[in-house]
Image 1 (cartoon, rainbow, N blue to C red):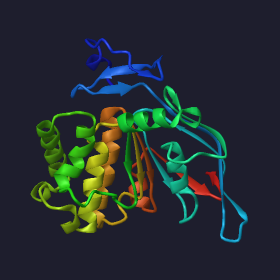
Image 2: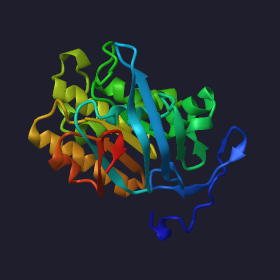
Image 3: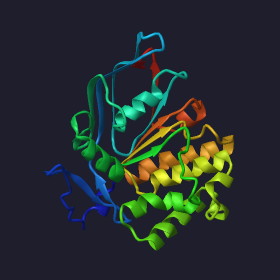
Image 4: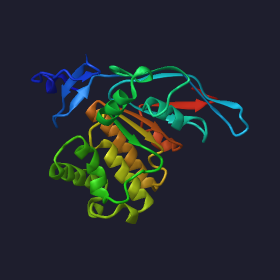
Length: 257
């Protein structure tokens, strides 16, 4: 974030488990930005297969990412891309290793701390959209803001604007069950970004999109990282999409290359 935007800011001192953490200050929308780096060290994870044999999915994975950086993770199906992302998000526990997101060490934090941190600072886009079928498109996108106690009117206004940015302005009141698979995935991307998270974890976010919208989603995620000083971790099979990112890491045989 440019220094000129910070010169008049007197940052608050947010806390995690009673410990003060650092902030960069507010961006132009008044959202507090964490001054953090993603650090993954010697991460190992295994599962039992159907025969009861232990299958090593991750074998000492280490990498880092800085604020403002978009990192693509590529690899064959079953290579462990989704497992790695779930571990980084604190949705699963590793067998060994350390994951730190700025002030918070994911691998030693309590479930309650992880849940709160994830709600405030992590945006998730899964391969399957996981939208709420009882809500329309705008309500699905606005929901994280309302959970964060933002007023419904303001949350809906932001949601409608976000949907319009991804060519869904005419679909805001549509029940999500009546949207195409590609439209549903774009709604999921809007929902992930609506709280302006400091880390976005996207697992095959363009799997149900045609080439034009896939490129638009990729450009949106990369632009978000750079403009907000956020980190985007993108798992994809799409080489063209990966090339939009600042770095490409390839997961093979349980290790990054």
